Amino acid sequence: MISTKFAIQRFFHDGDLNKFELPAPPGAASPVGPQKLGPQIEEMVRAASVMLGGPAAGELAAILRASYAADESYSSAFGKLFARLFAPHGLIILDPLDPGLHRLAEPVLRQAAEDRVVLNDALLARNKELDRAGFAAQVKVTGRSTALFYLGNGGREAIRSNGSQFHADSTSWSAQELASAISASPESFSPNALLRPVMQDYLLPTIAYIVARPKFLTSRNLKFSIPNSSIDNPYSSLAQASPWWTAKRNDCLSSTA
Image 1 (cartoon, rainbow, N blue to C red):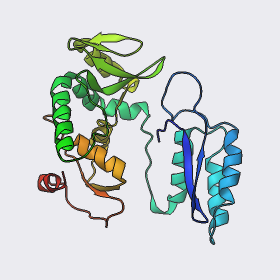
Image 2 (spheres, rainbow, N blue to C red; image 1 turned 90 degrees about the horizontal axis):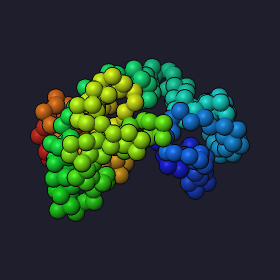
Image 3 (tube, rainbow, N blue to C red; image 1 turned 30 degrees about the horizontal axis):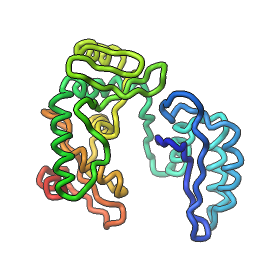
Image 4 (cartoon, rainbow, N blue to C red; image 1 turned 30 degrees about the vertical axis):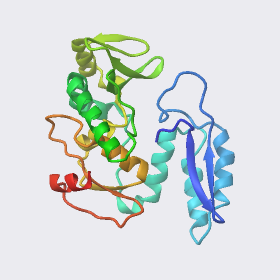
């Protein structure tokens, strides 16, 4: 869960939507996942617990208190909440910041750097298609964009390119140096919003998913974003529509683009 407002959770109570959020810590932007919740979370959990209703309210409040404690991080609290809620169903939860997952996804991260020009041209062309269809591009793409962030000492830094060199806020690389740096330390790099679904599908292939409108438009922004890869985009259905589970087929993807 990544949020510039460090949102914790939203609850409907008496017909109103109540949002709980913590202030962003000072300093450079960095991934939200490892950030500790701190003592402020305790009052939020108490306030949220009294809003829970129904016969399982007490059990849910206990799960909320056990999951969202001051010494937990955003990712560990979220993971423990879902692990406890879905314990009877065997749900497996992965931490996307785990270095092991980044090592497994190294080929995707490296290819995004090596094929930056081809990938960028495809994304710019896709943005024009969306514009002609009446949709706004959900992720800004320019001629200098890459699909990668560098997790340096200054936090999460967008990587840009001027053609022959790649630059983050705190360092720079040649094309070969960047590919080598990703291979040597993939946990120091992360995907942007357009590459993230590709990395997810590389690790855990997805047939279909139900998604809210903003993410649905982002998926339309993405489409086949990694040239020459074997990763197809899954079929995506808007959350307010009836769920439609279907095989991962190119003709379905074409008809829903």
